Length: 300
Image (cartoon, rainbow, N blue to C red; front, side, top):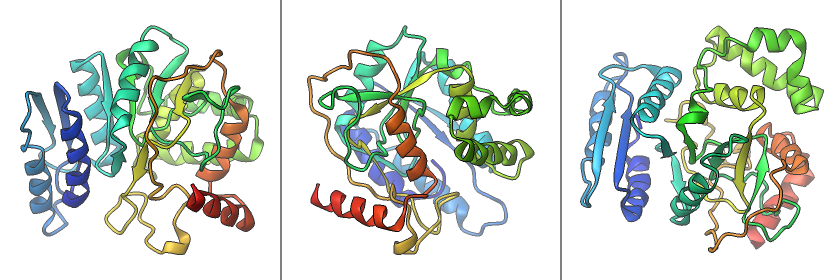
């Protein structure tokens, strides 16, 4: 969390409903050149002091601003030093109540399966079910989505915030081999360049990079369990406010997960789903495809 008390309050209320036995709280500090931000950060921290259930609460608060890259990466370093596995939510990722049980069951089932990097809560398929059996509760992907996610210490140990291997991977052209789409690989390559040069202050590109170079898979629910409510002027990266220009994944409603879960028979990534995710993430769907999917989502 950082400086958005209204969003933090919504997410914290869902956490309160889930009543975890342990809560690790990571917060960035205010920027010195932003009047009033210290007060907003204090309000945010006050929200998570309202724990009214039996819970071990631990804090990792920055006194001054570290920025998105350093604060989240260092916060997760601390978290995975403290615990073996965790469910992670940022202040603008509003989970469906079933998200917590889904993550818990996935963490338990794949705890010792080194093929799996993590569990995502977001689904980028816009109502389309994926997997060999469309009735399955989830499918496997080369993406390990981080709008509400869960993972293990064993996976986080593969993470390198500096992406020291990127120059070699770039030189050998391995990103093209991983993604199997030259245009999308080039887009990711430019983003990795910006992260490594310091132009882009983020931590999540490094998570994708670690997932790919170690040939891992992410779990994606066959239905969206996270609504990103953070698009707006206060956001660090998702600051679009014009309704017509909002990405397709902005404010997508959630769909409750059904239990008991139906597990896939195969641990194999769904390439068609990943190809579609590429289009949605890069917002390169055609105008008519966007209209069709918006109408489909309204009907859902």
